[in-house]
Image (cartoon, rainbow, N blue to C red):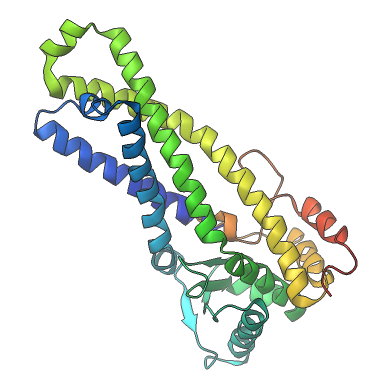
Amino acid sequence: MKRLFIFLLTNIAAVATLTFVAAVVCALCGIDMAQVLGGGGYKGLFLVSFLFGMAGAIVSLLLSKTMVKATMHCKVIDGSEGEAERWLVATVEDLARRANVKTPEVAVYPGEANAFATGAFKNSALVAVSTRIMEQMSREELRAVLGHEMSHVANGDMVTMSLTQGVINTFVIFFSHVLAGVVQSAMRGKDERRREGGIGGYYMYHMFVQLFQTVFGLFAMIVLMWYSRRREFAADAGSARLLGSPSPMIAALRRLGNLRPGVLPDSLKAFGITSGKTSLFSSHPSLDDRIAALMNLPPDYAS
């Protein structure tokens, strides 16, 4: 849960910052941003939207591990801190070998039961678990949770989510500008628009852009969360494969159902472990649906 929250928050901040900088430059220069974007027609507008949309997603991806460490108060461990930490690091190392990826950084953070993985690249990732989940789960259950997170890493889910977010950003920005231009033209005649000048035209145009981006952003979130739920099923199945059986993951999910879940930032929600009831805006399927999917895996799946 937490990883998705931080990812989305960083993505929104990056896109907003890029848009704000472009808007300020245009306003100071007396340039109508609507005319600038429209000057190259829809092809030019789509190219600008693509650059802005992908830039926000890439920036959030590259900053994901740094942002998580700072916001979640993660303490990176090497196993020398104690027996529990030593087991945790050794388990992640073993799962990394099984998943054929480089061992990620291992961290512990204060909070209720949860875990997540993040990082721009699967060979330089971070896997973190909360202090409470270490206390409340058996080692076999926690190993299954770590297998789930290592599957996210091995599957490259952070990169895939970033690319998906970038594409969604592109279309949100593109259609927001298109509709803002249509509304602006409908509300003002061409002669009036020329008389008002660039700055006045920009403010009206930008107001409608922000409005449409907010509306389209909600619909885009539904698509992104649907994709996130698909990746959760895949990570659960990946844990079953790494451990050789779906039973530990099933036990871990059942245990989570009886624990108070830790709340993760939005940018991390898709890469955490907890889930409640499924809705259009849920990053995770329900625990019951995840358990059912694991129980329906082919008998030879984990062999």
